[in-house]
Length: 420
Ligand code: EPU
Image 1 (cartoon, helix red, strand yellow):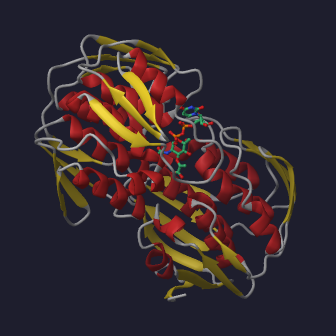
Image 2: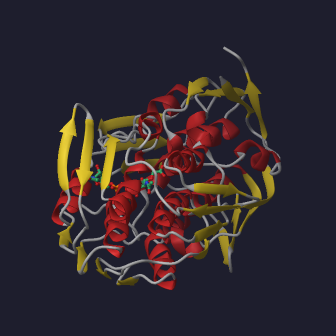
Image 3: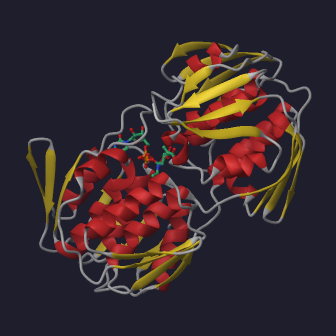
C-alpha cells in the first residue's frame, strides 16, 4: 500500500493553486443525470471520490469522457436502477444519485452509503424527503428501495441542516410535478452555484444560498457548461499550512470570501495574510495566540477545517477549546497528534482542549479520514524528523496529486509505493 514519507521542518515558499471543489464536483456529476443532453464540467478535480462517482454513473450506462481538468457527461438513458454496492460503500455522496435516478427512472435500489468515518452519517432526512415527494420506501436485507411513478412537489423542513440533503432534494424537485419548498436548507456556496447553473439549463429554482429554497418542477432540462468553484476546504487548509510552515505562500485561484470565518480566527491568532482577487497570501506565524472555535454550518466555521485548525492551535501559546458541533467522530485523530507530541485533551466526542505550543516529532501514523489525513501531512511537515503516513487513499479522496503540489513549495514529501 502506498504511503507518504515526510521529512519535516522545511520552510515553504511559493505558489499553490486551488483545484475545483470536490463537494461541488460530486453534485455536478449527479445533477448531469437529470438531463438527456451533454454536460461539460470544467475545473474538475480528478481525485479518488470523483473517480468513484464517475465509475458509478458509467455503471448506469451513462457516457463519461474524461479530459484535461474537465469531464463530459451525457445521460441519454439510464440503464439500471441499482447503484453498485462496492462503490456505494466507498462514498457517502453516492446518496445524491438517488434524486436524479428517481426523477429519471422512477426507481432506485441501493445500500447505505459509506465514506469518511467521522461519526454518525444517517440518511433519514433523505428517505423522509423522498417519501414526502411521493416515493415508496422498502427494504430487502440491508438494501433499500425507493420507487415513484413521478415525484410530486412537497414542503420539506430539514430538522437538521444538511448539505447533501438540501442538494439531493433540490435535484429531485427539478423534474417533479408542482412546487417544492425546502426550509432550514443549507447555504454552502456550492448550493447556489449548482442552482444558478440548473436555472441556465431550464430549471426554476429561487432562494438557493438562503434557508428557504423554492423549486418549480419543469418537464426537462438541457445541457451546458458548468465551471466548478474553487475548493474552499483546500483554500483554508493551504492558508493554515502557510501559517504553520511558511515563508510566504501565495494561494492562487481561490475565493477568500468562502473561508471568512477561518480568516477571522487566524487573524485573532496573530497570523498575517493579505487578500487579493482570487488570491490569498499567508506568511508563517512566529508567535500565535490560542483561540477557540466552534464549527457551524456555512457561513460558520467549516467542520472540514476543524482538523487543520486544531493542528494550528498546537503551535499557539495558551489553551484553545475546539468544539466540533456537526460530527461526533471528527476529533479522534487528535490521538495521532498526541503521539507526535501535541498536548490535546479529549473532553467529550465533540470537544478537545489544546495546550500549546508543543514541539512535534515525526512518527509512523495512519490517516483515519480525509480531513484528518491532510492534517497529519501538515503535522509531518512541521515535525522534527521523519513521518510516515499510511492509508493515504483517504487523502487521495480529496486532494489531487497533493505531494507534487507541496513539493513545489519546497516540502520534502514522497509517495512510496510499497507492495505490503
Ligand atoms: N444528518 C442527519 N440525517 C441525515 C443527514 C444528515 O441527521 O439524513 C446529520 C449528520 O449526521 C450531521 C449533520 O446532519 O450531524 C450534517 O450533515 P450533512 O448532511 O450536512 O453532511 P453531508 O452532506 O453528508 C457534507 C460534506 C462533508 C461536510 C458536511 C458538513 C459532501 C459530499 N460532504 O456532508 O464533507 O463535512 O457536509 O459541512 O458534500 C468532506 O469533504 O471531508 C466532508 C466530510
